[in-house]
Image (cartoon, rainbow, N blue to C red; front, side, top):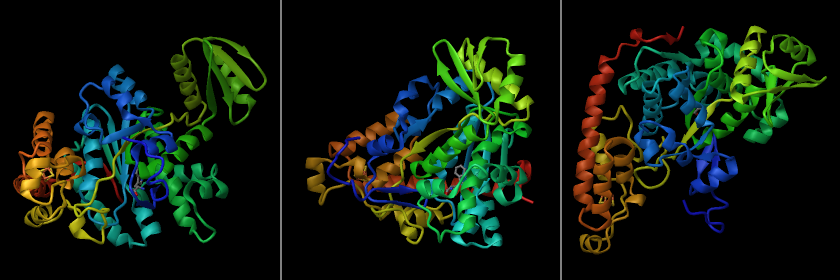
Length: 434
Ligand code: TRP
Ligand code: SF4
């Protein structure tokens, strides 16, 4: 991840509504304040292939998830899909991440962002319902188990809509403008869906869903503004705020001193009381967990700031960006398998101008859309992937042969996917959609 100050400074755009230019992931980490995933990977028992390969390149507070996994405490994974077009390989990546986390012990919450698609893209309710169902069937076909999962349409889920309203009381126009670049012409609904998304992310911590717990949100870095706002809101709507002290925690109340006085009555730790805060002495995590429990008893949210992981944007098969208006630039999960195989054969590669040249110089797998398919979707085994990489680099493998293998694998994957989708019965799942 080389940092280059001169190039790409002006043209990299990463916002929830637009992604463009050459993405410099080192710069993204720095500018957004995301932590590199490499610092937590050693703590994970059987890291997913996307983690091992650096495709999941960043995170926020993933250590909370690691700790909950190790201690066997409850935690959840949550993400959402905007049903504006059919699910493609980019969505498959997020779905695979949710499935992995569910298998690793998390409770899975999956949102169909039909309100977002309706407000931002102007799609009819019938349309978003129809497409949304295909997303749900897709994630089921990709291995999500009905046990420990809840799937929902935003528009049907009053827990989320009510929480969104509550959260929106803490957000004002200047903040939205600063985070999202909204203008006076921005429709209110487009602004409100930012609160809906924050509620998507926080609802697994509501009392009805088992109360405060670590929640990880796997997303692309374009969604980070939502994550930042949500982490902020989690703190703002909760009664107590925590600050690390030497040997303890300083606790403030965001909703008035009376909550501090109430809390003091139950504190089993050593503490010193002040008008505006309490200093409590002991183990940080123990104290915070205790106070969160008390907050829930007092009727507060006690939200834990959500964790997140960030995956790379996938490159289009045709070289530039993946674009929904260019079907040849991506593979849809619902493409005819033979059609998808042809797209792979036409993809741009990291190959050279001629076979002779490629034998001499070797290919460039890091620039190759086909190699990207292998590493994200087609090859689970690291040894097998490394073999392709090195054979490509030293010119032993030529693109024709390589693409043939990839296109066969894609064709098989999609055929298998079709069978699985046909076998899915959403009635086996807890789905909130009416
Ligand atoms: N805004 C997301 C997108 O455009 C979809 C989404 C809705 C989402 N709710 C979410 C993503 C909650 C993560 C978490 O893809
Ligand atoms: Fe890509 Fe394979 Fe060609 Fe290497 S040989 S550049 S991995 S298509």
